[in-house]
Length: 420
Image (tube, rainbow, N blue to C red; front, side, top):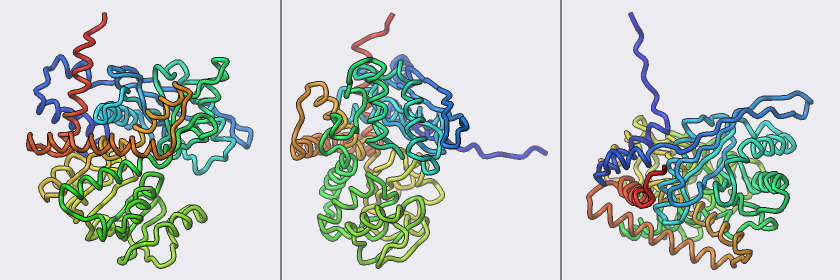
């Protein structure tokens, strides 16, 4: 007898499923779907890198340009052992709709290298980055495709990419990447932009549902850049962040964790584990805690059909990309949980990346408060537009956000026509 095997749904499968839901709601023709659904370009590269021990190790890298209908491709680069082409295609697709939702003139792109940066020295990471930048160099540029940091990459990695690109061209081109160090043309406010954008959309959702942020209980799954900044802003507005997690474990305090102290603890030890005045809990327990706000801020598919029934939050703000599977989406919707979808919730990062690119192109830089004010305006306007579709069309917030983003890409594509 044959053995039945269950097909594992990939992030790209989820992206395609959500695209079709929104396209159906928009009554998009098959012609338009065929023009905007699929990636324009996919580059897969092999990266031989000389390691500290003198031996050469081979890595796989990817850069996907999903759409350039509304402007240059835009999207981060992640270094992670789990990076696959399917994942990068999904992330590039989401970037297209994300840029359109916040109405900035970029398309969607994404990159990744399958590696474990935690096991690599700084020298090895630099060699890998420069090799990868050289390999994808024909695709990137300030008018073509503009990378940025993502999972386990940072401003230093962007500095190496900017330098590699500039050395090849023969003059400095800061606009080739965003998320750079301030000294190389980075923008004030870029580092906290994603978490700040998450907070602004949480404020909007709480206002809509009449849940005061002051006194609200929040849980943050993934205490990296976005999760820690969102937690910090919630804490400063007198919410109680009762549990957080990172790749090594979860910590909990029913009366609220000391977030500034926790950020210092993670900087000192590399993890949230072992924080004073906290107790360890399992990740599945954390997702099931009684709270007002749940922020999945780690990787894809963290909330699925198996654990979605356990979620008790009133609001789920997707600081990560694709943390909820379509099956889990339906479960949360049936439970009446208000989901702020990733392409809206975490669009603060790409919005301030756009601001950085504009500043680089103009050679004129803004004050931090100017960046924050512009970001708040963009995020809250975009939330209002998505909420209006959600209420008028009686569709989920995710479908509403996808409808807004996809309709803008469809309009641009239709206006441009088909070449040749």
